[in-house]
Length: 352
Image 1 (cartoon, rainbow, N blue to C red):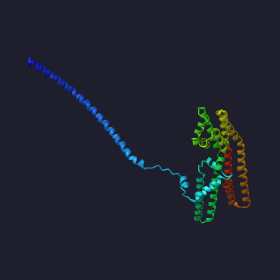
Image 2 (cartoon, rainbow, N blue to C red):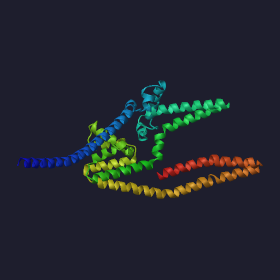
Image 3 (cartoon, rainbow, N blue to C red):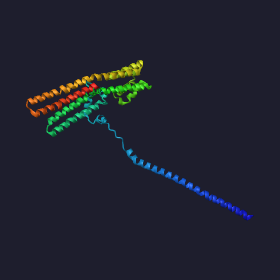
Image 4 (cartoon, rainbow, N blue to C red):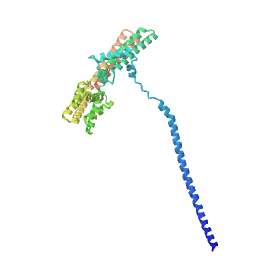
């Protein structure tokens, strides 16, 4: 009996050992695979972090040590007073121009996009002086100093006069652009009012968008009167109406003042928009006849008759081929050029 129990225990131990031997390798295998994948992921993360750190370490000194360079030319020219007496001359010249009745005012220069007219006239003086100096140098090099001085002074005078009347010329020749800005502002006001915004919110939105040009500038002055001057909305509109020099803006202010007192802003603005468009179309239709007549007058009578007369006089005086060449040069190079410029300006003004 003793031997049999020992034998049974031995078989039981053998079975237990075999079962343990079968299970343990699988567990070890699974744990090894899991550990290898875990270590692999950790290693990949470490390499990615190392690469990111290396990239940051490579670029950070360059980003930190490179300052943002912004050059304000107006500050360098005027505020730092590098030009001394020339800056004082530009101040006095700008004061004389803006306070003379027949010359453009300060508001005209602001309409033209010139923030500080003193810096503008300083640049004009520098350009005029540089032009005279360059023409004098050219005259010395070519051996004709008098011609260089006279041409330089003439061009400098043209630069000065053109710079003074630049705002007037821009407001005259680009009236169509101003009209488009006003029309787009009216459409923007109508769309915002239809979406539930107030008139003040719509004006502020246009004032914050410089793409609207003159209307944006005008509405900024209204907001400034309300916030800093203490005026109410209607008083600010009346002040803006007195201040402005653009007829369409006066019409817009009239409609806004009327709407502020009686209501119906959308309807009044829509009527103003339709009236401006209708008037523009009628002007274009009436200008077609004038443009065609002026073209026939300039390029017909203004060129053909002088050309034929000079050719006939050259042949009658027996000047030969040189006389014909001189006539062609005078007509096509000088008279034709001036006629084209005049006709272009006329068409531009009529279309605008």
